[in-house]
Image (tube, rainbow, N blue to C red):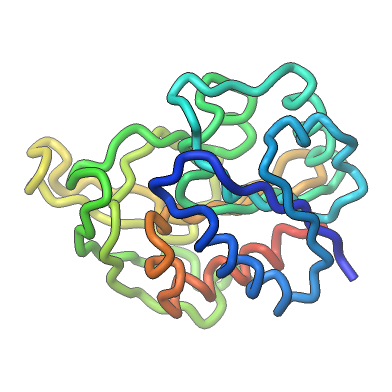
Length: 218
């Protein structure tokens, strides 16, 4: 049995407790033994005993940071093979920590359609041969469409295309929605969809994340 540390909480707008209930079922279906925490300072612990760290956290403050001990523990564990996986607010957390953003592979900047606005947008699978996208076809999401700074070293699994409806200069801009990456011996998976619980419960999104959790775990 694999062991996962599940950190959730932070900004209440992402309904972390309802999302945690969804994630709990997903992790159980993958036979993870899960330790749930709501304190980011638990990242200072020795994380090498886990196979996966699941980040369901969203920033409590825009200037939210990680301590040197948190950064060191997380980056060391992942470099030694511990996986990291999460969704949506994972890229809108600890944004004052450059090392965190470097590890995750991206950082949230804006949702051009507005906060919490269910903007319909296409999600196009860019790598159909990857284990995370197995069986997932192109679909339409209706959620916040994230605009992010992203690492060009990411292995992009799915992307979206912006229209110029909300910000004219974004017309035709392609933006990653889901990616996979490595950090030393560890794997990192991220999916940008998930502002509300129902976004995550969409079959295609659930499948992406379920397979992303499975792929990222040591």
